[in-house]
Image (cartoon, rainbow, N blue to C red; front, side, top):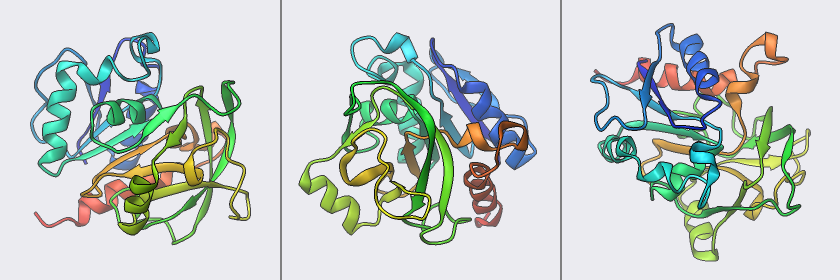
Length: 232
């Protein structure tokens, strides 16, 4: 698995994401600057990290989504490439039109930074194939504008097409413990071809025993396994 991580001014989870990719793949991650207009050859996965791209000015992710490299990321995604956006990366993917819905201010109007639990709603994607249906796992969140908002039509489409990847839940998998007020407890959604995922929680922050747990590692292992078994 050859992964790349896009770096913007204000990214602060880029190295964490790169390390998570490297641990799962055994291959060095390529770092790509936001002003680059072309991507390296032979990429399998592009990660868009968390942080505060361009200081979150104007609207979270809005300026980053107009960077030259994001046009190349969109072309990569439209050709069937795998793209993974975490937190601010999720905001960038929505602002770039690669995922539906919007990310708004948390319902508490406060920054939230704590562990939450997620329920795996689909295993039919490169990101979730290693999970069991309905599997509950622990992962950190750290955001101020993380409430995923979808109108009734968009929500019906996401549900009908099985494109809700993860929802916030209690430790026993029951609905609830929503940290930001997102629609239908949604924590992560898939694109139309199921090869683009955006999520607010940070699996890369819980992917090594030294970080206090390895629940998040399963997502990266799922990507590596999916690519290893893909037809050549």
